[in-house]
Structure formats: C-alpha cells, structure tokens
Figure 1 (tube, rainbow, N blue to C red):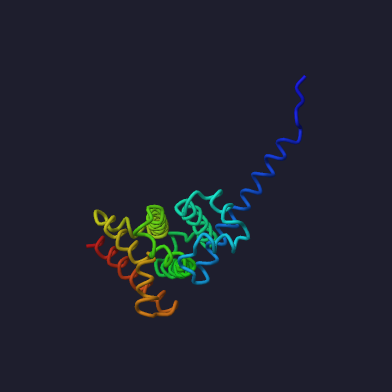
Figure 2: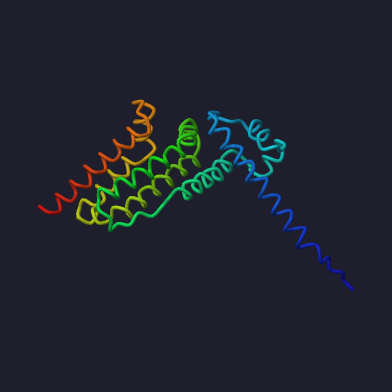
Amino acid sequence: MIEVDADAPARVDGRSARAERTRAAIVEAHLALIDEGDLRPTGERIAERAGVSLRTLWTNFKDMETLFAATGLRVNERLDALWRPIPPELPLTRRIAEFCDQRAEMLEVLAPSARASALREPFSPQLRRNREVAIARVRHEIELVFEPELAHAGEGREQLLDALTVACTWAAWAMLRDAMGLDVAAARATLARTLGALLVDAIASGLR
C-alpha cells in the first residue's frame, strides 16, 4: 500500500510563498536603492539590502536582465496605483488639468528608475523593452482621455497621438525637470500648455 503524505501540498505551497516573498524583497530592495540615488546598484548591494545571500539573489534571478524585468513590473504596479480614470465627456480644460496633475505625479514616481534605466539601456534589451511598455502605456492613457479630440484630427490622428505621447514621456519630463531645472509645478504647467495647444489645434483643424 502506498502511503500518501497529506502535508506535501502544504509544504509545496509554503515553499512557493516563501520564494515569492524572497523575490518581492529583492525587487523592493533594488527599487529602494535606486530611489535613494544608487542608480547602478550591484548584486551585492541589492542582496544586502534585501537581507539575502548573493547566491539566493542569483537563484531567484538568473541575471540582471530578469531582475530588470521584475522591477519593471513592480514600477508598473506603482503607476497602476496612481492611475484614476478621467471621463472623456468632461470639458477639455478640466481633462487636461486632471491628466497633467496625474501624469506629473506618475512621472515623479517613475523618475529614479527612469534615470537608472537611462544609464544601462544601451546595453540592456530588457530595459529597452521596459521603455517600450512605458511609452505604450502613456499612449493608451492619452487615447482614453482625449479620444474626442483625436477623432477631430481625422487623418492626422496618429500624428497628433504621436505628438501628445512625446510631450508626456519621461524624456520630455526629464528635459523640463533635469535639463531646464523647472520645479514640478512649472513643469506640469508647461505640459498642460503643450497638450492644450496640440488639442485645441486639432479641434480647429477639424472645423475648417
């Protein structure tokens, strides 16, 4: 007669839960170091911050690319927590104001990891994929909020969407915040003015 270990599933579930907690701790340690200004944290520093051995780190993540992928997902979760739907039927000025308030908040949360990624993107396919995901995300958000104005653009819809996307990316925000030295309020006002000009022009073009 074969004896069945009734506790085996519980042990497997317990190991899985511990493994998930370990992976989450490593990802959070990676982000915490970046948030504190360590833009190129080593495996040793990440492991120390997470309270695990270096061997445990590389057991859970086979290389930095897989860690970059997991960290990118965690950053997206942070942004998900900030996203609030903006009804497209609201007046345009209110939608621009609410969108820019939200976008500025999201970009400030994104800032440390975006700065860190910029240092390694030329050598990291995963970080370039993370950037593509970020661009696709903001492009989709723009479509949700400003679809009425995009529709007014007719054949120029994609060009208008491209222009709006560029204005809302981290690269544009970095120009305002880092290169030009604007504070958050001034950068947000510049973003709002840019979106307003693009969207009002689209409406005017549709009426001609």
